[in-house]
Image (cartoon, rainbow, N blue to C red; front, side, top):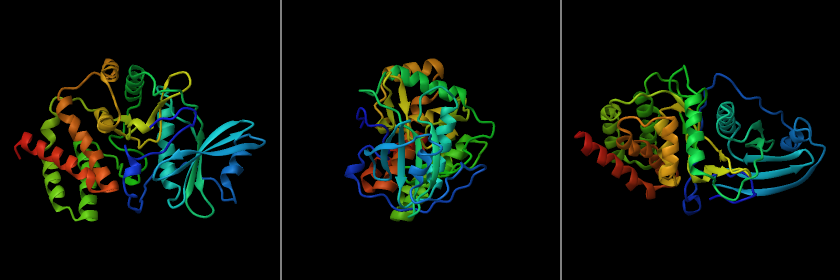
Length: 333
């Protein structure tokens, strides 16, 4: 859902309001660098805005919505507006991962993303992130422009370390493991599908989806025959709630779960993104379609269906199982 003139939102599902609260999970992050974390104060957000944010006064604070994970607020000041997300139960690691992803995308100068300014702990527990406030336009903008700019980001940002990211981060509130791996099929099998399958077995005792899913993981290599796979910077959670446009009509993407992966994995939330023909046409003009694209589309959707199953429950299980069964029949395993 996109609402004009309210800033940025933080959602984690197509229809979060219809789903039960996600499980609380422990996070274990590894990193090669840390974003600077703000010092503690009674109100560290206000303190930063009135010092490093170069504002003399805060003229208004208002809620701008949010999802089932974070609260979102707009801080208006004499130096402009800031967008602030807070979480009362999760420490700064989650927002540090988001900030590093936003910075990585911002530095490509290809598609507009909010620039992150500060991450820190809240004195009563939890954490916050302060970032650029972007005034949204009246619509999601031009699909062709979105496809082209997204492809330009994928083309511009490649990793020499392989597939992964410098930190583990989150997809919704689920930990997303980004250990650097040289082989994409291994990375996707272990750290994407495999992790979600283990979580489903752990949370729901779902041995059937685990066993069938693992059989797919072990036999999915032929789906990549003929494809040239490079580690491109991905937004990682690109659905309609994380896509908008600014006042000039230029596309904006936000609330990422970044990592370096196969560019086609970016379309894994397409079942909930509304990408049309003009989007794909513009995208493939910059990043040519690889052999076997159509037969891999559902494989990349599977990760997100499994994540929704783990976050929101059994309503998403049948979609995930259907994809697994279809691939097992296709691969004859």
